[in-house]
Image 1 (cartoon, one colour):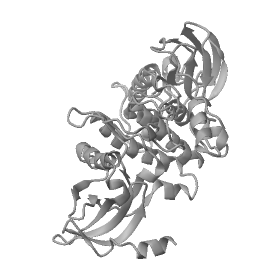
Image 2 (cartoon, rainbow, N blue to C red):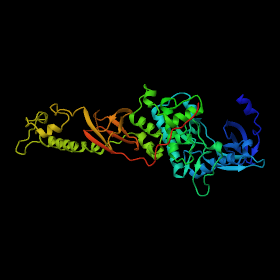
Image 3 (cartoon, rainbow, N blue to C red):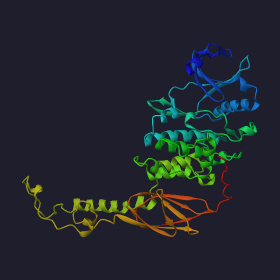
Image 4 (spheres, helix red, strand yellow):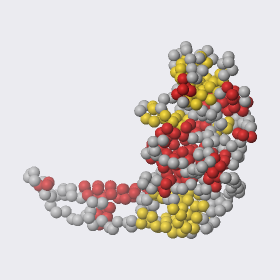
Length: 441
């Protein structure tokens, strides 16, 4: 049936604006249709999105359509689809001309199952960089979903292009943010919608995109979104009220590092104040925990001692000046016995079998918060309330989260290098928690 629709499309064969000859239908969306068209003068193929005739007479639909062109041209980022023209032809058809992409959407790729962890993080990184550029330009996407993340190829590697800024929120003096109709107050796709958009809050900011990317990353590494429901109302309720299941429990056979799981769950916090403040912060968290300064520098004195010891070992067996040289070639191979090296040399030489006992395999971490009584979650598992003492494997990565009612959730990432104490000062919330979403279903 879809193929029949493509063949019967009246625009195929026509020339839009006298320049773009429509060759074939690429896809059908909520606002219009996308075609492949050839520029009659340049001989170059483009993607042309044409607003449906039924929507062209509605001011809000026209405004949404124009927003996509404005947003993409305002940002000008490699990972955002390039818009080259926006026009209306003699028949009154409104269309946007974009670069023609070849590849597949992230939605198509997810139909084949979860992605390898490295691939998922790389797609999230490129998407996050595009959205950070949008946020820096004062633009919030508000409808990020796998269908709007297109994966093409550049130099033999996946290259992401973010599409469809049709319901983006643009905060600029020249464009403003015109209020749409009541039916448009809840925007976004229910599977990926943020809690604040689910509540119909109009004053959303860039952290709503952080939430959506967290949902998409969750789906990429587990194969399923964090929430599902039989209808839109159930999805809206779950996004607004229910905590997501940790990704490691959803896919127990997949090796999901603790720092990745922690980053995803923080991006999915219900309160925007508890999420990452920027896409850059989310992407940094996905890269892994930062080794504490003490753990990075503790090996320097030992390394210096080892170098000194090695130098002493080379100098020690040198022949004394008073000793007569021997012409025999075998003599250097069997030197006279030398005194044993000092104890300090052996203590730093890792090759000596009599080295002191290795440090303990476990370290103790004392956790506390101000005020006390905060719940402690270690690598996704709840461990108790502060003050609390935990034992960790030496060298293990750890993500520790502190949460207390009335205070913002705090998170710390570390490597257990030695016994240590961690005190976190919790910040009061600037405003009360939003009320739960109430739906009838």
